Image 1: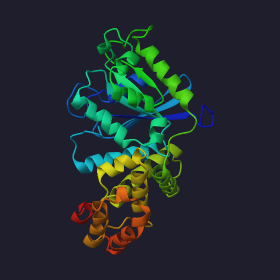
Image 2 (image 1 turned 90 degrees about the vertical axis):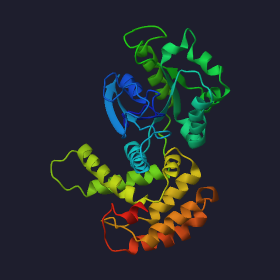
Image 3 (image 1 turned 30 degrees about the horizontal axis):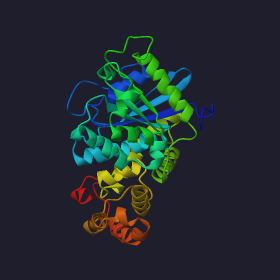
Image 4 (image 1 turned 180 degrees about the vertical axis):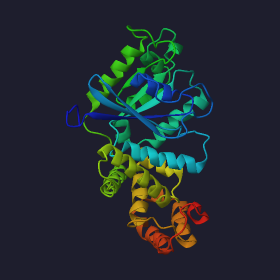
Length: 334
């Protein structure tokens, strides 16, 4: 993709835990207040939200995700927002920004770093940059000096190709020059992203979702509807369908698939392909849903998806053979 004029939009996905400043980081990058942000131990961003703005002649879209790694939201809400994150990011983001806070990294704080390393595939790290917030806590250090104090933080930054920046949404906001200036730091961040762009991050899950969005756009037959409006309508339909078809997939497996863990991608794609039905999505039977859930419960991700396609298919056969029903019924939830 690079800096080609034929692909003007740059999609950036914010990842991180509740309270580390993803939303305020998004506002700082876009230089406007578009994401809800306040000091809170609970997630302010309860749903995946995207916003865009032209910066230095380039269209930048920032996708702010809920605290997927530690949020207190209920399971179904988390799953719905992971699916929305996949849809908003398709056919693939140009860069993930892993948002962390400048603070003392004790055992509890280090858990999020461990989880990021565990959840992200190698290709994800190849398209990632670490962005620290609350830069005023550096107290005279550079961010590189701060990172060196923690072997695990250094390992994460190294995995991201040493791409690391820092901002401060409160104290550095109005400074125009120098290290402690958001204007300077965001400029450096965007330059890092631009230099790294050799093609967007994608995987088979994101590709399938993009294909489904394109198919649904063809079904929008209203006249005088702009392509972007068609896409928004299509995304809503795809979100609803995917939420039903992925009912038995755990949120953890879905999150890992989004972030590029190969076994999780293979499994989720297998489930999606087996559960595909034309036209209206059909609610399943207990036998079909239980068949899928049983496969999931048997440790399929570790075993690899290919060998399990047959048993998943048998579960889906029951799932699709049922009469039409309410997508919100107890069967789907099971």
